[in-house]
Length: 341
Image 1 (cartoon, one colour):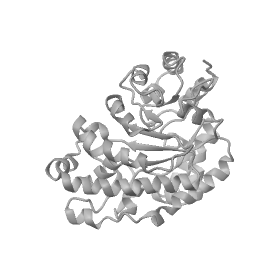
Image 2 (cartoon, one colour):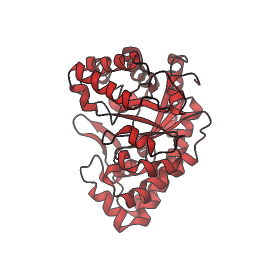
Image 3 (cartoon, one colour):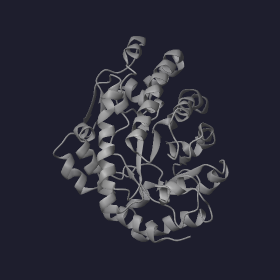
């Protein structure tokens, strides 16, 4: 995979154009996804290797992107540790047994890799299907984000319960985060051993944290995870919503790539990072709702801004929304693949 555009860019080598993949690229904006989703539950899709491979391959076959990303969910680690996880239409993920007390934290298991073996099995099926064509990205949720779901019992607008634990019971928060971090590092190494070509850590809710809280309750655990990865020839991507603010701190964890949200000028942030760290991003996904001429103009504007920069992977500042027209996503990929520096 060393000759792949994506791997080269991730290791800050020269590429003739930016490689492209998109967060949530195998998702609900595709009719073909719904053909599968209408037959199976979300967790069935994640836990059945052939189905996970089917969904992973959709953007490979239909969009011709430069990297595939494993179809799974960031909360499978929380479930493996003892969370009673379910997904329902229009509601999203729910943990029926939220973690709120010291006893709840103590009850969470960290010896859970056997419960995540289905992910390794899916990776092997996907790699057979990819057959060396493009790299496969594995991923995991960052400890703070997984903690927030475990504590809140699902999605939250204000993370009130999570922040109460951080502020009133920091010792308990650190015990919980340390457990999640231990599982996450082992889980990512399981994926690497199974054959992924890169990994991404998703800290989806980091923007809820103040700088000092991010440093204490998120960054230090991501740093610990990255330090424990078997990362030879495997680029590590660090993503959080809030990366436009936190990127200089994220760099201290020594990822190969930092994925940047759309609230900042990408070249400016690249220039503030060590030369060895690539950037990924950072088109506002809402642009993909716009007319095609706008999509093309905005992609070209970003590429011209990044002209002459090694270490740039095109992505969105966050995931594709479910109602973005498929044709617009396909057109964006075509525009990117035709571009040359």
